[in-house]
Image (cartoon, rainbow, N blue to C red; front, side):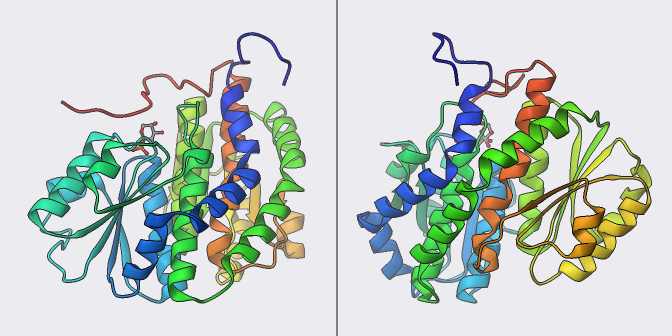
Length: 358
Ligand code: F1P
């Protein structure tokens, strides 16, 4: 990046996207020394079910964290937007005994998230864990315990490394609580795999975006990858003001596939356990003329042949460790599509870094 006085439009976002492998490593090291994280690891052994809560990107993070939590611990976990906890507390089932709430907020200031934390703690006497990137945050003041990841904080209004780093922190808590595997070895495997690919991924996406014009962006994922698909759609919407939708992969056949055309960009997040059924949808959409972008750990020949653009991580880790790295191609697609339109991905139109309500 040229050392000019004013940063290039959108440079914060790109720098923060490319910094993820190193930031994941430093966050994980910091958590090993973090008193709140260690205290939560002890408490977590007896707490269930788990309710993950957030707004915007932090809500999709909550959904991915809940899926990863259940996969790693075998314990029940679910996710809700903070607004649902506030507006429909009864259907949020907050009176469950030993319920553990996790409130996620990069800024630690989002009004809905703070109000949900207060309601859970004061009215429903629910255990509250806050997770944020902001030091000395309001959220940390309200919650019983709070994990803070300042290394993952961002200058960009758009959440990228904060999303993936806070997700990895919750995967680390789940893995260490369940004692199922050596978290740091798996994290190092993923960080090394991405670090060796991310510059090439960035270059290939820049060329792909420059040589295509899309009318619609579709993101498809099943199970724990559905929230990743939702976050992918939000990234291209925030950074390039494009119209995007996310679906469970097999659900896309039940109506939405009517829009597929060559100017439809379909990004598939392929899971390890459902890949055969997901690939059948991918091949069908290729037949219908869609432009296919595939994100997976290792591609089959059929996926490799049918993909217009393919991202393989090639890391020997279990599914919960693939959630964070899989969002990177979607972050880069959103960034380069916004930059191509002459927009500033650091400061999307109509958005504020924090949604503050009176
Ligand atoms: C949540 C959020 C962001 C969004 C925008 C507004 O913020 O919705 O996801 O990109 O910046 O705020 P936070 O509660 O995680 O700080």
